[in-house]
Length: 137
Image (cartoon, rainbow, N blue to C red; front, top):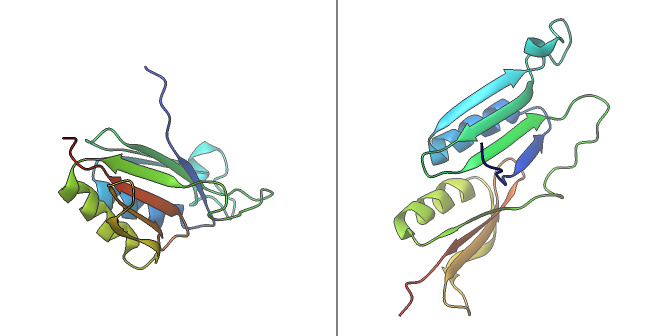
């Protein structure tokens, strides 16, 4: 297996909902494992997500988990997820879905470097950047 670089997002109890949302946005295969499946059957965290992995047909991998007891949950301060490429329709579709119900900090529009770029924080508190590269002449 090749080494891969991907974001891993911590959630404050809504990892299942967030990862299912990202699966609806990006498609692909979602694997969810709960704390209960790995030895915490009778605990309050039994149904919370210990590890989730979304692998998409476009080659994206997104991982996440609910923050376990004893660890601090600090949403959105340690990660920004970047999507970039030149497939205008695909990237605009992702932008539309991710920004829906979230906060747009930079509207998706042409920037001084020539590409379309936007930044938003989705409804789960995760910051995203979308860059649509313009064709090279």
